[in-house]
Image (cartoon, rainbow, N blue to C red; front, top):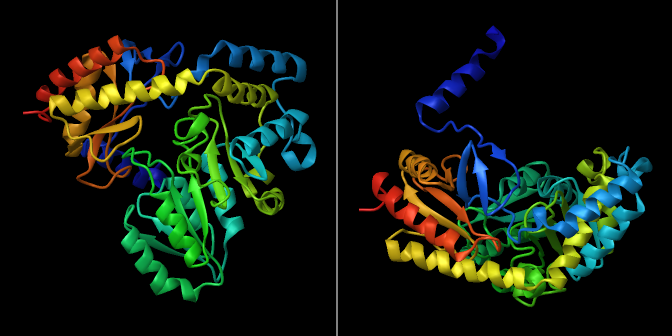
Length: 393
């Protein structure tokens, strides 16, 4: 249609620039080994950190709840879509995060879209890490607050911005990812909490990639640093280490109560199917019963990082299971991803606008399900593909 010619042009430009990517199609179950786009591969692209997406206990919990309660909740939470199992899950998540209360949203993305605008408004300030997730950026845009960005994980710059701007705002919040999804590094939460509280700011941590991965029992980055009770807002996801679907806010009861009245994604979206809530509850129990899953995740992480470094790859500042393999050039990163697929390894190329221009990489994520044989095979494939794509000399 003539009215959509501009859209056609944008798609063509993406293809001409080598930035257009077709979504890979998974055949069968999500796992450490999978069939992606018709090829058997070692899967290094999944957020299924603990292998819970296919855990028999979660499968049984979802099936049993579905048979007992049905396939859908049938309404938004504020009408007749709040089921007892939703409340049970929120109580369990609050305990998991050592918070007074929690509220479940449809995704981690919508949790940020709902929570940030409820927390601050006109006349307030947001101090946001420059590499925060897109959902935080979009949540900030929905407020009437002023956003002040500080350089990524630069505590001197955060302090300078607080000194320069905090006095202009009625209230303010410092927002950061716990684990940064593209670089795999961890926020300096002790310094952030200290600076924020000295300047009378709340602290808001999106711990999507830290929950289930970091800290005692996988309780996240806040627990990793022993900062329970000192971080006002924690955002978690049920879609990554938990292995199911959804997001949540864990905080003081007053904020949770406000979100039930003002959190627009919560107010205007149908609540989770009961089977989803049941599987999430079971995931929390499995994490407590099987701590070896987290131990294996970190053992695999150490092995794979060491192997990549030994081959000569630049893996940036990562200290978590997310490990970027830096190619810097967009076309080279996509070529490395394509070569890896030919070698039987699936790892996604990440280019602008997901990361800044000149910071293209292939992002890898190991899980508790990978075996040493899986990771050794993947490292051999990286050696060959890295040379073929011009990433390794």
